[in-house]
Length: 247
Image (cartoon, rainbow, N blue to C red; front, side, top):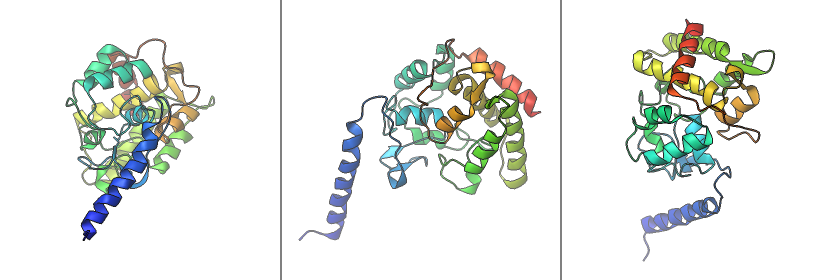
């Protein structure tokens, strides 16, 4: 007699097969964003698809430039994807990937104060117990509302948003941590938003591209990567300007 547990295991296997087969048929570059219970960014999740709090990395996985399941990704694969798709310079890519285990699954990046941090531009603090990859649309709307007359979000706008995120964190999160290390990551990710995802165009990113990357975790159809590789020096320069605007 087949037990109830065996039936559940068999059913789960059928569901997993049904989910993975269409994904395996996708070509590299095709967009597929897993949703519902099959995906999680909680550290050490057992979900079929793993994601992180980083929109850029999730975008790469959603298009198959990183493994679509987000699991067991090598430093070499991260390097290839970041340099090829965003034209991130070798020194900045190495700075990032050398901090990661080799290999690593994307959910591990959600470990608090590893990559995930408080006072994010578009994610709630971990204290409030929302999924690390869940986009806070109130924060998104606030960021987009800061656009300039050209419909772009620049260093000044992002810097001022960073200032207000920190103020909100300190006011509402009794465990708010914006010490040196998470602060450096926060300003670094904001710099990457402009220099990498924004392709360094006029030191800004368009509202349309910001929505595509931050909300949908998808390459815009008209995205063109920066001509000049975005280097560690470039990130540090942008970060310094952002900190000045956030002061």
